[in-house]
Amino acid sequence: MKQENENDGFTINVNSPGNFIAREMTFNGTVNIGQNNSDNTNCNDRQVAQALENIVGDDQPIDMKWKWAGAYWWLRWANAYPVDVPLFCRRINGLPFKKELPVPCGYNDIRRVCAMRFMEYDPRRMDMLQPSSGEAKEFYACREVALRLSEGLKMALLPPEAAQDLPK
Image (cartoon, rainbow, N blue to C red):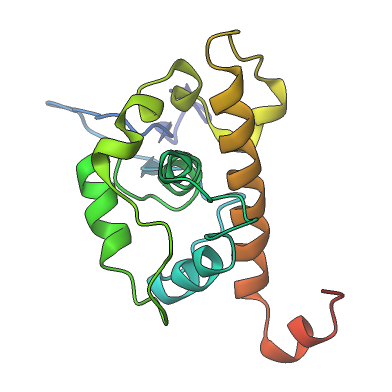
């Protein structure tokens, strides 16, 4: 919390997937509660489904069930998807996919990875993370999923004519 100037009150930004409880507070300035959207893709469910369809399957980043944890990591931080893993899986399974995914998302398959220490850090800053030796395999697999999903979501936001001009 910082004071903008002597007469404006305070600006409060809460950029955490956790909870924020305010009691008996008066604000005279800007209050933003929620995730920081400065580099958020803010895609809708159709766009998320499209991006996921492109990275799920054989020879793709999500080729095993536990690798859905990488999608959880990205979507939780960058697209305000549920932090609660069972709710996340329900949201994913309710997306408007055009085809059935060959690797389904399930709570029991990702819960162990979603509880790892690196998941508590914003994946948009993943280059600053150094995983522990016990989490390295999962970290690098989730990193690949998050990077590919990020690129897919950016593509989904482009107008169709602009997306056609990009190299495949």
